[in-house]
Length: 456
Image (cartoon, rainbow, N blue to C red):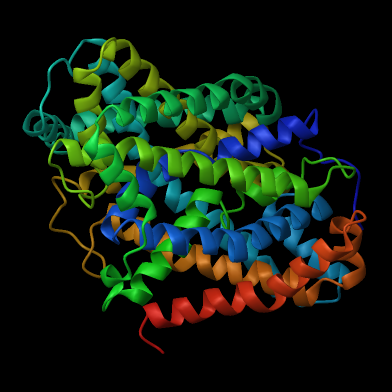
């Protein structure tokens, strides 16, 4: 049933796909979320579990998601419906596509708020607002931003307009043009930050030990929670279970190796996350800040470094600009599946579909930003909208989506179909993937998920 091209277009080359998928994966999840999540669960022990999750769960499921997208050549909902029909499987499997689009919808609602923080900090950096700043002043800057709903609304709105403008024009051309320059530049800047962190003498060594030396004493009484968080971080960081990778896979050439491309993308994504930790933790420790201080970690620690380093104003503007574009490419990939579905099923022009999807996400994002200030007393299951959407997607929706993708790829799709898409002369690699996707990935995710919700 596979077709050679998607009606939405195709990546111009394998390199373009790697950059685009890396742009989707490498974003705020690596530089904003990974360091503070690692800090909350003791650093090195969390990193070790995270790497195991990426290798044994993340990569196999990412391969499956790209494969499903390339096989179906449609939006995730229509792809899952068509593939299920071709295998004489129940139509209910299209639920996987709906779940992915819902996850992306919820994630983008709070992701855009954080991207708005990046916009605000880029402007402040350009005005020299970080010159000579200390830990107390940096914390006050961030607290003042979070407490101002009108400023948050402004930046949230600006970012969502930026996302809508790109998606309305189509992804392949604009996205490819951007990531060819922005991803290498972000990587290079992170290396500069690591070099700067190395000048913190003892703090750098202490930061590396914190990041890479496992201390499982930190897991006492929280093992299930910590492992689930590591797995959720792997899903969040690799853009799994939210329809984005499946959508991007639908634009991939039939001749490209899914295995090789996914390993490269996962490697780039993980390397950026580790570099971010290597840059941030020494700065945190050198300035007496808490490594587990939560979502504001990057916005409270990096300004201190920029305020003290030579040329700090220039590097601050450049860093937050590139961080913005990393967030931008990820956000585009989150909106793309919904837009593609509206184009396919409603017959709308892409600009109309993108505008409607963006408007709905923008409205939900307002609830997220208000939950940080005016609506702080309104909770869902004990959490504000921002924290609830973050927790629900990373720890519930994405794992469920991952399990279903693994089960469908490993048990519903015929071996003939998966071998045709993945083998490419690598029989041992294919057999390893098939074993992981059928037994290790879904079972591991399910056990951790059930433990987290208290059923085992």
